Image (cartoon, rainbow, N blue to C red; front, side, top):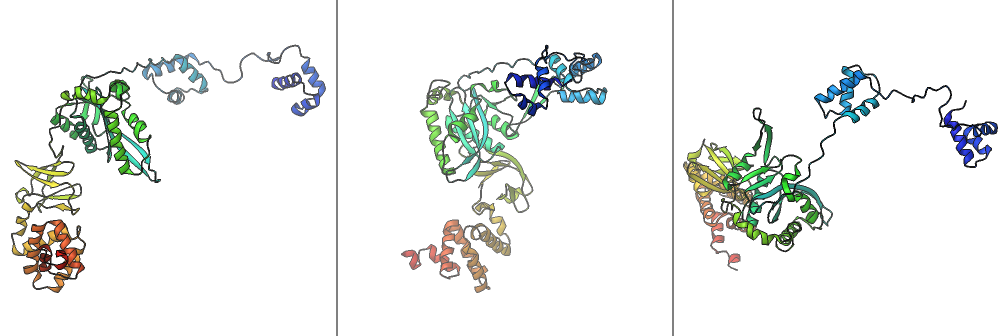
Length: 479
């Protein structure tokens, strides 16, 4: 007896009108066999003689003992993956059958997950909520260059006033600078500030072993910032978009409406267009959610916002540092001078956007955050202790001039001093250096650098030439 599949192929070929010769070429059966198959009384789909009626393959039903084991495993871990359950059946309970019966049984008996709860969009009252987040994307400028950008986005929930600014990264300082930017743009911060679980804001979430209540540990800089402003954080639970309310697509909105919707020549052009776009979104465009221009609702919300108390310097991130034996502290690759009496003391360093302020007891000293010479900042009032010993004074003045002015601001200054040392080996310390130092204190960095460049270009090496240039006594200067 030929297989049922072959007989079915012959039957369908005859019904299609194929000749016996073609069918023979396809199936290998002669014309006589084809006629016999075509005259069969029962369809080929019927059970063949001698078969038991059971489906071919391994049984699809599990033994009661196996079903009991599966029920026990799922009872202990309802969300256990079937692959893990099958592994345990085989390694721990000696199950040797196929996987399909296990998958079928689990699919039929595992309790169905509860249907997802509807997302509840809630609105805040004026001055109650704002959302803050980081976003990142790759931007391709029109010149073909690409750049990976990170940006901060913040928005008030009531008025929908929006602020977006580029950030150097997703750090605590960049996050706080973004909060400052939003506060300056809208007039303050609301009572509660919704944040995702970014490390710049939330360090950990752990359940209390006794009460079961979740403990949230905020980033110390973020917590200090909130305390000084007098507002609160509202860390969103993971995968809980309904907690963020109606503006949870803040980053998506900023990307779709600005970053990917426009073309930019370079970063400067992007920043310029970003300013224009924020002006349009906040001052001119009607918000789809509220039906009003954010500027109008912001006027109602502003009286309820908390203004920042940090003054013109901005918020300073707090760091503890120790003053070294050279009366300097070091942070971020720079050194900052302190009074000599602070040597060995632990002081508080406040890192502001453009300045560094050192606090010790009731005294403070303020430095530029990025020194002009790219190495260290030495305040004029901190120089006298360096000049106590006569030789020490000369060498300290020379070192300050060489490091703070000549090497960085004026490369020609190195040649000036090299020529001076070798041309006047007996007199440059006692005569030239004190005069150069007095000119440095009188003229400042930039003006002295100009004088040095002038003298080097004319091969005139001596403090008197610098003084003549500064007094306008050189013919070229008078012209």
